[in-house]
Length: 69
Image (cartoon, rainbow, N blue to C red; front, side, top):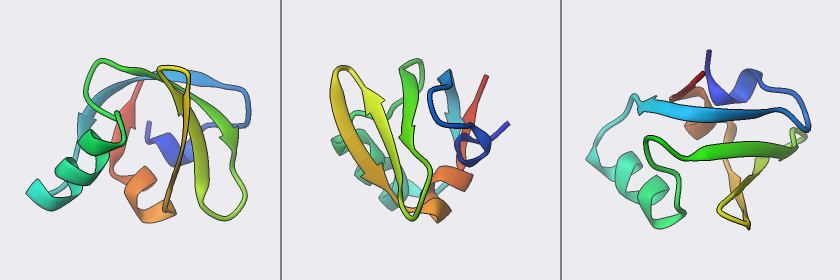
């Protein structure tokens, strides 16, 4: 399942990120790395997720490349 498929309030653990070095770097700088638990705050427009008590907004294209369980 990809992060973009989660509903508001759902939480999941990041398993892998399917993307190049640039995408992985951008997500790393926002705290989105393998093993972290994320919770969806908003799913309208850019996705807003909470990770480590921080709220982060990412584009839908990025969210499609984050595999979660």
